[in-house]
Image (cartoon, rainbow, N blue to C red; front, side, top):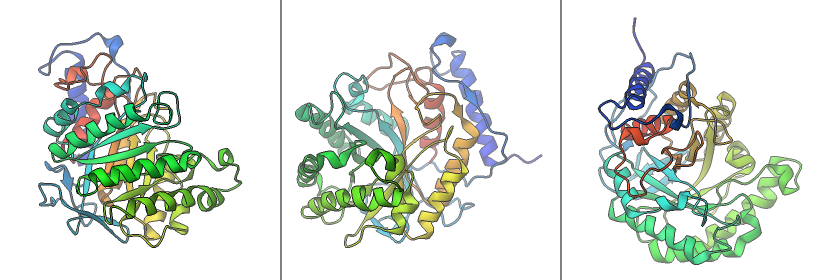
Length: 377
């Protein structure tokens, strides 16, 4: 019987999970109660393109196995529905840090050592700094603290030749437009000369009802798009070409709606797609495909293998379906989250070091799967 590459990856992952849980060759064991999530796999048969040892992979079809020859940071541009690396279609993968907010716990991983470790040990091609904005402990309350954390990660990424996403991690960014303009103007002035830097100007707009609108089209055209155009104008006044990624209504799922009324007048604009494999399945891939068919470029700045709540079981089968979809369409991606909170989406077990040097026994079920995906992207 022939086993698909997806099936092979699933088998390898399950074996590594068992070894880690039993304290195999990867390090000292921990009690089963410290495992933050349980694996559930889909029985769907999936075929996947060949894994690449590079953190930038490129393919012209879902069955391609060629590797983008770029081995260092190159300019990113957008042409039609493709994000290009030095003019060639490709994709990068890496982890997203948790909210930067003071007192939330995830901020302790905003260190140079963590950035260095995921580059060296995970073969990451990117890291995402998720700066909390309006919530308790975020940028609006503590601007200097949160900006300093982001800058620490950005500078470590530049030093380690990693792409870095500067994420305005907000659900109501339109309520703080001037703060966003000021922040991204500062980031563009400070880091706009570096090809490493990617601006994500609105993490996850809420659903239309929360914005006081009856449809997603209204929420996009009347709330999110005007906000995005104002912030983009501020960035482009300083930085003419680094990639800018824009969110869409319904927690950055309505990319097809944004694609029907895209932002114009600026180069190198993409739209963020967020998914959690335990919740978002084929219907969201169909929406993404519709957006691509309409000619816009997508970048998955946040995804999880668990439920949309950030908790629950890791759905390995559905996650690998998403990986196949992203490979087919050259979609870059960042996994949520590089954190040790006790929930399914966390890559690290509680108590993991904020200085890196993690063994597999420090990783959760999600972390083991995500490390394997990123390392072989």
